[in-house]
Length: 122
Image (cartoon, rainbow, N blue to C red; front, side, top):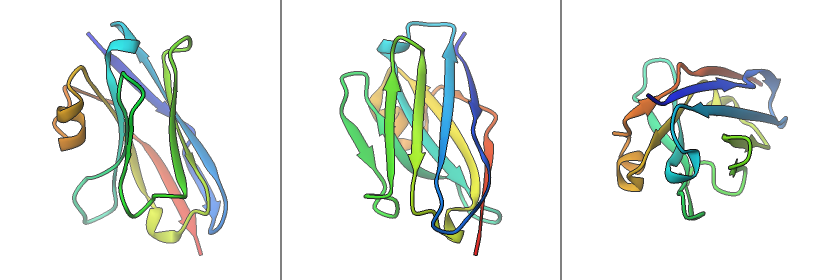
């Protein structure tokens, strides 16, 4: 059974940076596509970024150029570096995993973390 644990959220001023981490356990990390999603209050969960097991990345247009997804297969961890944060980036950020890249991109990945809160003040 895959387990995902996010960390690194917090309160930051607009223009600041945060790095989220998602620790993966239970299976072979390098075989999984990893993704980040977010859900703001009163809104649906939305795709942020994904890092396929073969090192291809995808980003939502809203964060392109500001956020970077990366993974460390030796540490079984995926990261989301968030720069130039805006108040509209405020949300709970979730990590997702699946052996199917398509499932992660569609938001139907098999495994999800509990989420970490990111709050950006203006």
